[in-house]
Amino acid sequence: MPAVSIIVPVYKVADPLPRCIDSILAQTFRDFELILIDDGSPDNSGAICDQYQARDPRIHVVHKENGGVSAARNTGLDIATGKYACFIDSDDWVEEKYLESFFLNDIQPGCLVIQDIMNDGGGRSYRKFGLEAGYFATPGELSDIFARLKMTTMGYPFSKLYDLDLIRKHSLRFNEKVRLTEDQIFFLTYLLYVDSIRLVPCAYYHYTHDNPGSLTRSYHSFESEREGFECVLKALQELDRKFPVLGPQCDEALGHSFFRIIRSLYTTGHKSATNLSQRLRLLKELSTPQNNRYLKTSDKSTDSLFRNRIPVFFYTRRMFLCYDLYTKGFFAIRDHRNALKKMRLPK
Image (tube, rainbow, N blue to C red):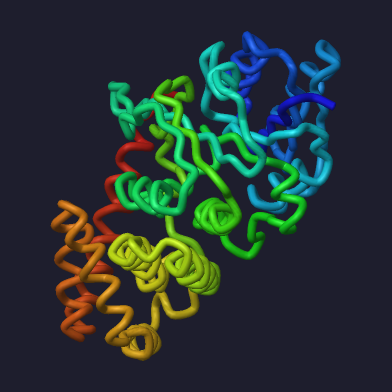
């Protein structure tokens, strides 16, 4: 049984995939298995996975029909044999001491180990959180670190070491109905069962986000975004009962999630995208005092005037026609800029 099962979902990443796999195989900590889940990639990604599997017995490749990143990660969890699990995105890469840094201290059962990450994008690289070393085990210490680090926003699956026994005991899985916040939902639910948290100040994970097609920059179906909001709401309500100091953080996280719901009404292909009366009806239906409170809370946490603050102002004051006109214009300008960028890309 290896110490760590590394789970990497793979889909249309033929160019950055070798860098990712090579960085994993170069780890100083070598007691791991690498599970590559080819999620029905239409490019050469699956063949690249097979080539690496032939070279290293620690690599296991699964080819499956495309089902999304949640289904791919769940497949990895189903076959993982390690004591711990960690996730790496196939367009990212890690430094050689990434795994080793998780094991600098003894790990108690039910302990979540988190290390910092490097944000690589826009021509610069910087540490995202500036974490300091620490171990937190008492309820008071956990509540304090939850509040201080705004852990409700740290939903990314990578740069964490998960206890596989805990995952199996509570049947934790990624929600396959949700396209974006599935990792946040998984993380928030996992936090309900942890007994302690260890912070590692190292930042050996390099998160690359220059991809214009990144999921975080796109919106999905209204149904998927609404399902994600409901799941985040449920997880945060349960977490807030365990750590009551998280109230404002919960509202902020819910505000971001709710904002995605109302923005999703303007995604291409949605039945209401070209029907003004349908959009106005749904906007009005979703506008409750509670949801508007979430929006106002999240609005205070961002400096994005045109992307967030102006539309939130219109929506929370129930100026739905103004919100609709503004948002339609915002998406039209964004799509035009993206089209221009594609035209300038070298062929």
